[in-house]
Image 1: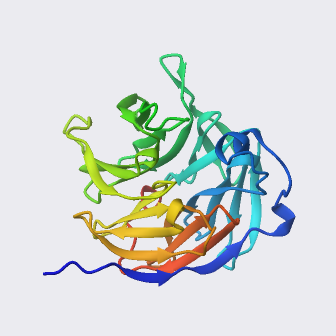
Image 2: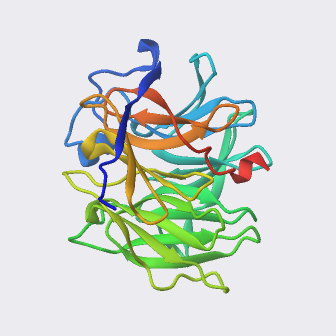
Length: 305
């Protein structure tokens, strides 16, 4: 059988950040270090749906978390001194927020209250935590990226168990970013952004990782970012450098490309809608959320239980 190139679909606009929330012309320390000094008016990340069907997103440089209604209307949940990146909902209704400056935080969206969840390990602070995912048992896996890369491949991956124990699973990742579990939770996938690859590691019976390898390789100036998993074990990969989102089969074959507009810089993804067949994409370069229909429903998350 000859290899066939992946199909391509175009993402549609779901909702754009309103002008009232944008901050044009404002320089931030985060953008100076991570966006080449550009005065970005926002930088969206961390899409996650709550049980009511509202989409939560983070805005890293301005320390904000927003809620977007199904009709595309935006409201501010909280604004604080921090750089929130990843966000995942717990089944009890609160959200874990990976904050680049402050570690892992716990957000009560209804009361707009943030409090520390995990801020250090053995008195050592994190490099700069990035993204996270809950297991079906409530363990939180998260990446500690900082400024690591091929020049300094010391990014880490942690698991914070439901019982409150913090385990370090990996210490050698060049820029660990997005993170997801396989549907059977027997493998962990991590986007190694500066290595332009997605790593896969089997989870052993004691919870450690073994025989970690490259699952998929990408290309371009910016490597893979946010990840999501569908019910069939296909991996969704946001690829800012290619202004696209890719769907890889369980064998690591690219089967679908979701094309965003030039300059969109798609950073992260979340399945949503009544049947979880719609993929929502934070396009951080222009401050919008796009949407595309997917062939398989997204994997049921811990927040859905």
